[in-house]
Amino acid sequence: MRETERFFCADAARGRGDPIIGTAPYGLVWVLIEYRGGWPVNGFDGLDLPPGVKALLFASAQAARARVLLIRRHGRRRREGPKCWAVLRYDGSGAHRQQWGTWSRGEDLAEVAAALGTPAALGTPGELGAPGELGAPGETGLPPVVLVCTHGQHDTCCAVRGRPVGRALDERWPELVWECTHVGGDRFAANIVVAPDGVYYGGLDAGSSVEVVGEHLAGRIHAEHLRGYTDLPPPQQAAVAALIGRFGPAGRHDYTVTGTSRVGAHWLIRIIGHRPRPTAYDIEVRVRRAPPHQLTCHGPAMSSAVVHEATSIRIV
Image (cartoon, rainbow, N blue to C red; front, top):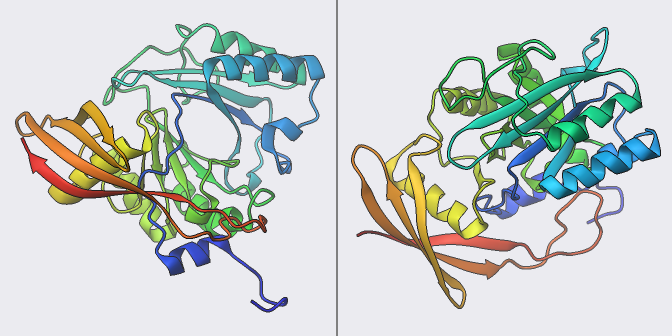
C-alpha cells in the first residue's frame, strides 16, 4: 500500500469477507455515562474527573464485570441541564433491570458505583431519573437502549461508518438511540449494541441499520449482521446464529443452550428451540485462526483473528 493511501480497517475486512459471527464480547452489565464533549481515545478512563470518584466507579464496574461507555445523542445534539447516567443489567433469562440518574459534577457519579452495588434499584430511560419497575421483554416501560459506536478517536471507521447509522436511527427512534464509545470489533463498523438484551450487530449502514433495529424491536433477530449474544461464549454464539440462519429470524430467547463439549478445534453445542414446539439440535462448530491482518485503523501490528464456523446442524 502506498504511503499516500489511507487504511480503513472496515473496508479491508469487508474486502476479505471477515466473518462477524461469534465476535460479541461477554457482558451482562453496562454503565452508560452521558458526556457531551469530545471523547478521549480511551473513553471514560480519559475523562478529567475527581480521582477518587473515578477509582470508585472503576472498582465497582470491575467487580460487576460491567462495561463503561460514554454516550451522547447523535451529533452532540445540544441538551440543556444535567447529563444522564444509567446502569443496565441483563440476567440471562430475559429480565431487565435499568437504573437511570443524572449528574452535573464529577462527584455525582459516585451514585453510579452505588447503583452497581444495588441491583434492585430500578428506573426507566423515558424520563431521566423517573421511577420504574423490573420487567421482562415485551412489557411496557422498559424499552431497550440502542447504542451506536461512533468513537472516531479510537478508530476512524467507527466514526466514518457509525455516524451515518447514528443519524438514521436517531431520526427513527430518537428516544432509544445513543452514540457511544468503543464497543469492540472496529473492523465490523458500523456496530450496534442493543442493551440490556446484549445483542451485537455489525457491518451496518444507514439503510440496513434501520431494518435490523426495526426487526429487533419487533422480536425478530436475523442472522445477517448478527455478531452474537453477549451472555454466550463465541462457539455458542455461532451455533445460535447458525440456527437462525437455517430456520429464519427468532426472538432473543427462542433458543437455549443446554450443553457444550469440545474435542480439539471442534465444539458440539446442544440447543433447544422453543418454537413452534420444543426441538433439540446438535450444532458442530469449528474454530480456526485466520491469516494475520491489520485489524484496526490505527494498529500497525498484524493480528490473527479467531473464526467460529458452524459446520453441521443435526436435529436430535
